[in-house]
Length: 492
Image 1: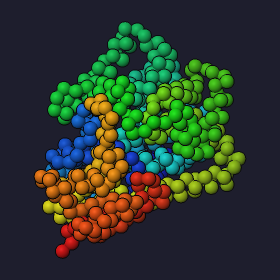
Image 2: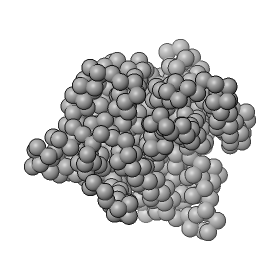
Image 3: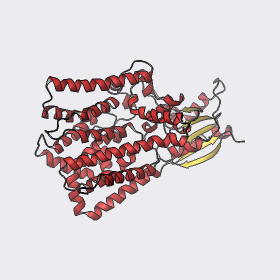
Image 4: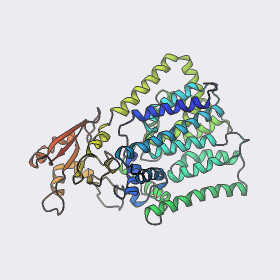
């Protein structure tokens, strides 16, 4: 792959990502649906579910505007079937990921020290976690795509003084304020290396940032229904009020021990060696040094934030594979059989994660989309365990267990999901007692199998029958089971 034609590269990358699209059918995190498809469905069709993030205004509509356009187009041509609503955004996301892959290949060809980039590109494309996320409608995937494109346009040489990358960076940071952490070192390197501290250059920086922020405020305020600066709200709720700690808290070293190593696999060892080797002889104008400092800086700052997830590290993957490209080439050339084995193992891992692990959450929705429209649905599962209206596309009355954080500083606060799992029978009797006006028993109840035994008496006494059992995962937890069960009292 010294000088492959652009057509061969493009077709190869697209073929691989389309295979990933075909393989990945499982559930990963709620944000894939509840912070993208569900909101786009609500905006387009006028019914759906808005999570608290969109109600208080901490998310920018820029990240989902393309999905709204897709849904509006399907609606205009009366093609808004459930299948197209689910798969059209994912297909377009796959195309965009392919374009960012192409930019990665061109970037590494132009600026890396690697004499042959074949193995680094193969390892990059076969990275199971990256492939697992590359076709999902996650804002982190979109952030990674835009970051990769911006890295391609970044002026790595002193002769190149172009600033078009700043437009992309500006919109990435508007969409995901935490992207500022990732880009701050690279912007500072560019600012001082190209001596952009003149009035003209400062004005250009400020203008680009102002235009991006102004566009975000106008779009977000229009769709939110009132004036809002989502970037400020994001910082206020997550940094000052520390709302994100409601969902999980990890130790400061989590990214170094649990977050990054499983994400990269054997490449983590190559990256650790490469970083140590380069940091011994720092050269400020060296591309690898700039990227290694950016990666380590991001990991350190992210480590100070209590709430941590592996997907937050996605934008670092292109940088890591860039700086390790030469070492990957050396190792894979020396141990070819091992390299082939790892690539095959990566594919097996991806197939398992994409086709079997947590597959029930999405599979069950295809069956629920076919129930009568006058039905009512109750999901007795950890909050946001399945998609909802984006996969139902029917204005069915639904109820889920909510897990909103303590937005109003209520003393001894407990969210609804925690209250339910403490005593499921009590919650059901209080929620659906005869004294609850308009609260009739739902016609369909969806739950994990670990809850079925606890609620068997309640279900039997109210004539509920198990009509569907779907495999979900081989690794159940204390609130998620191996199977998902669907019960109904609507049996004729």
